[in-house]
Image (cartoon, rainbow, N blue to C red):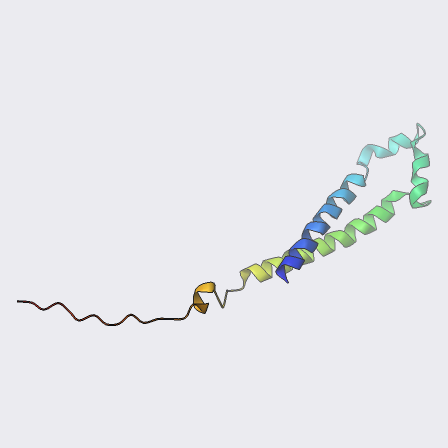
Length: 100
């Protein structure tokens, strides 16, 4: 189960990075003055801001929850180890050497 959760966590990390890089910076609105505003029709009339903000929020929540769950799994004490599975063998008692 931990392996599946780690794979999901890594996938969500990559998606979150890509979504953040897709978003424009604070000064990106000046590009609309010079004809760059036509590219926002892909995301609808509201532009990419509201759509990408919602997707970023959902992916960030999934990232935080998977991080917390992985931390919880890592902090639990281990109950069984490989050494515990090895059968215990008692060594025969050796007699003490005689003193002369």
